[in-house]
Image 1: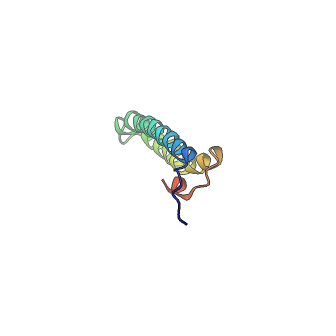
Image 2: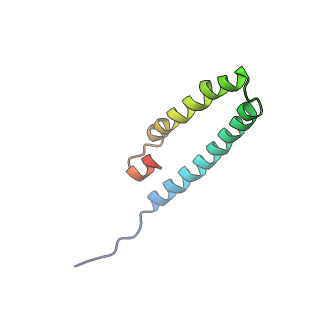
Image 3: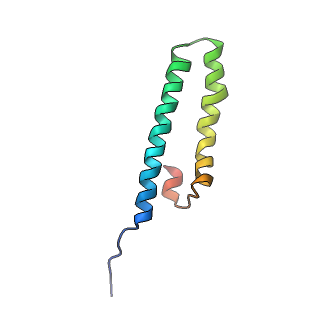
Length: 79
């Protein structure tokens, strides 16, 4: 016998929450990059913001989200 399984509601809710959270963080990071780096191009402040905040934030946040949201599905980890 074959059957059809209903889609998991928790999977789709978690995916929607991650999408909203990622969109908010990307917009906030884009504002920091625009106002902190692009408008101050070539200054030491721009380099300090870029190399001191933006790059470490972008590298560390996925690992923080994996732990904080207790992600176990591989499609969430690579998204």
